[in-house]
Length: 184
Figure: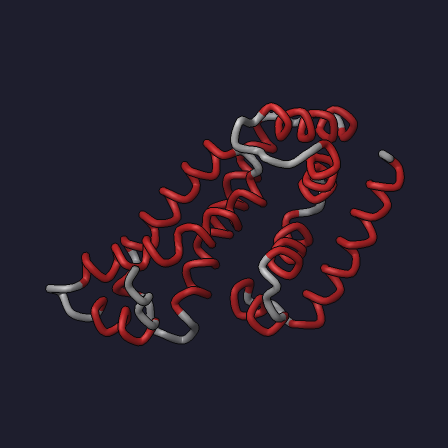
């Protein structure tokens, strides 16, 4: 197995029209799994996550020439994937507006029925609790808890202050704990 290329090497290839497609293929190969799981934690369903990932990668490809290296390539890719995920969730919430109780049961049942979900009922409850968080809190929680990203990196991804992120994370943790206590 070959050693992954550094962001600097990939960026150099991206700037060369003759190696740009190859470089993007490397990006897809090196970052797809991380991005997929971030998207999946937001949209929950495997098929939806695949669709969102395709849209995010297409958007990245279409705007690769505008990448200015103000942030890391991975941060830029995360931002695109997260925004696509949140857009997808918002669009589907408008389409399927239901009561909170139905939504909670529906999320847990949807996860347990998903053939790609490999968690148990406790994991489904945790994911249901996370899914009920407001978009920003859910995103901050996922990036901090699952991806173990620093607040400074999340701040660059979401273009918000570290203080606001810390508050969002703290509130999210309290809401999740309360949900799990009520549904135990």
